[in-house]
Image 1 (cartoon, rainbow, N blue to C red):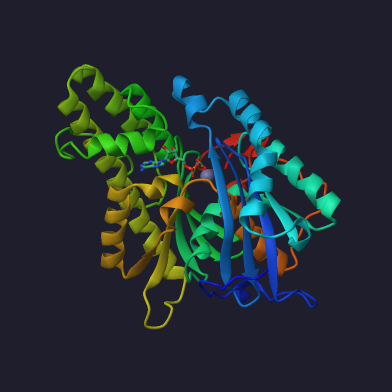
Image 2: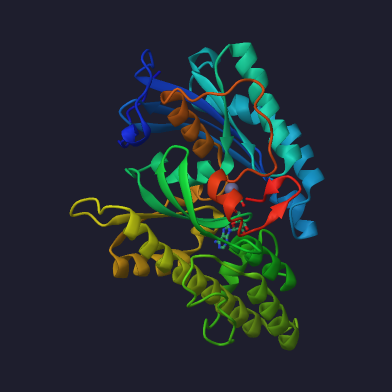
Amino acid sequence: MLKTPKNTQDITATGSAPEGTPESVLVLGVESSCDETAASVVQRSKDGQVVVLSSLVASQNEAHAPYGGVVPEIAARAHMQKIESLIAGAIEAADITWSDLDAVAATAGPGLIGGVMTGLLAAKGLAVSLDIPLIGINHLEGHALSPRLTQDCPFPYLLLLVSGGHTQLLSVDGVGDFTRLGSTVDDAAGETFDKTAKIMSLGFPGGPALERMAEFGNPTAISLPRPFKGKPHADFSFSGLKTAAARAFDKLGNTCEQGKADLAASFQQAVSDVLCDRTSNAMDMFTKTHTKPGEDPYRFVVAGGVAANTTIRGALENLCADKDFTLIAPPLEYCGDNGAMIALVGAERLLLGRVDTLNVKARPRWPLDMGSATQNPASGFGKKGPKS
Ligand code: KG4
Ligand code: ZN
């Protein structure tokens, strides 16, 4: 039951498929690390063609909205309630049978442990009953490779991963081959959007709500800091900006709609300026260590939930034009959490012969680049090692 592929890309940058690997694989991907339960079937061929056969996402926004943020216990329960029907739905929507699957991939971390365990255990059960390999996926690698779902995006590329839990700049040199160039020392960009939106009573999830409000505001109306702007490294800091926005909101009072819109626009502009300034430094680092792909510009990928923001995308597009990079961003449906990106990483790993045993563990913390995270953890160490 193979469908016409939509795009082609090269996976040989990190090695070739082991002997006996089928020409094309069908992988089920399961995602449950935060507040979206998702399942998807992706077909990936050895020569790099990808087709998303199905992609279902069940959002928990309504359940968390009264609290203005994700409540881990509510999230875990909602994942348990939805996971089975979502997986069955993804198989049905893909118009395949269970026995067509070559492997099952599930997010094994980082994320909220209750949710991660729910998805991973469901995947383990399927792997056993269908007698197919299990692949435990790093959620961040899902975001990192997400543009490869729909377009040519060969390695290497510079990645800005900007989500609710993470803000990092990484050099992506192959499947599982990442080097961190910078990361946040405190809040993630998405978290800052969410917290600022909560302070301003804009609703949940905060990022899209704040962006909608910002449409009606003047981005230069309120002066806000740009933390780390002009510093020579590529790290980020957002907590000072969040505090400054909270102070500005206090001064404004809750009743002035135009003032709220101006604050939203000014805040969004500040985040955008900071992301561009830090990315510009990372671009200089990346071009020093990577050869230019012939006549073509270097490649720059922005991925993760915040990549859905139009102002930020536009600013990054301008930066790319200045620095001789091409901007590659996944379509909006694959910016936020989804099962297709997990299925894709599973398929890429399966084709490289990198599968896991049933012992693979759910991990609340799991840096993409364990090496540099251990040596230089910008976000600090916890009892269980580098945070992210
Ligand atoms: O990647 P994602 O779906 O989940 C994580 O892995 O964190 O990202 C969710 C984050 C949330 O903080 C959300 O507010 C933010 O992405 N976000 C946005 C927008 N859409 C989602 N932030 C700013 N503007 C948006 N349009
Ligand atoms: Zn995510």
